[in-house]
Length: 123
Ligand code: HEC
Image (cartoon, rainbow, N blue to C red; front, side, top):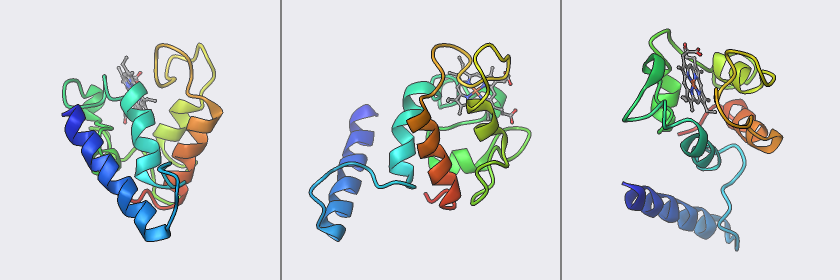
């Protein structure tokens, strides 16, 4: 699975680089490719194929857009609207903060998620 995901990401980076003549493989801002590694590292253990707390999966853009058993966790184009942004920006010690354990997401990681939602949460 990890190999398949890497292959897809590599293919995606190559496609982007080819399309833009870019020399870097870094994901473009506002793309799922930029957000996916952050969610994979910090969220998917509880919101993925093995465990899906609140029936929320964050291992694909489509699942993330689908939301939880309570409905959508974000509104494309409106980064401040949904529970996802709200929960990753809560202060340390708050019961609802995501992820619930370990360090908060860094400002750069929160910014990447915000940019992706502001860009309309493209898949
Ligand atoms: C250790 C397990 C764990 C991790 C890691 C985790 N979550 Fe959660 N998440 C939960 C649990 C349990 C709930 C439901 C209870 C609660 O709200 O605290 C939840 C609820 C949520 C909800 C609310 C869903 C709804 O509609 O009720 C969102 C949004 C969410 N998580 C996003 C994230 C994001 C984004 C990350 C990564 C930055 C993350 N979570 C990481 C366990 C986790």
